[in-house]
Image 1 (cartoon, rainbow, N blue to C red):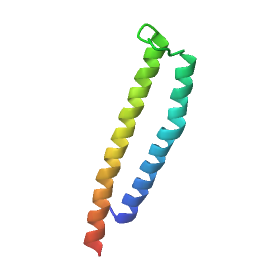
Image 2: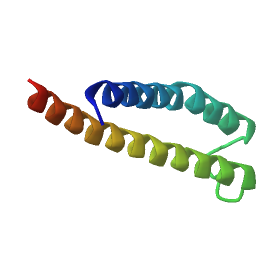
Image 3: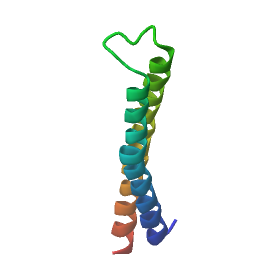
Length: 83
């Protein structure tokens, strides 16, 4: 893969991460409010679903960050080869 494609892919991953950290996080915050998550949410099925969404969001975010790190390593290697 050439350097411009790697940089474009990194830009797309950054955009995805930004969307996850802003829009999706706000959606989950709204769901938490609607699910009436108090101190004890273990018996609240809606709250359980929101917590699963929240955990999945963190998993997706971590995976994106990991993919971005690997891509940055490839970009650095490509720059060293070309210059």
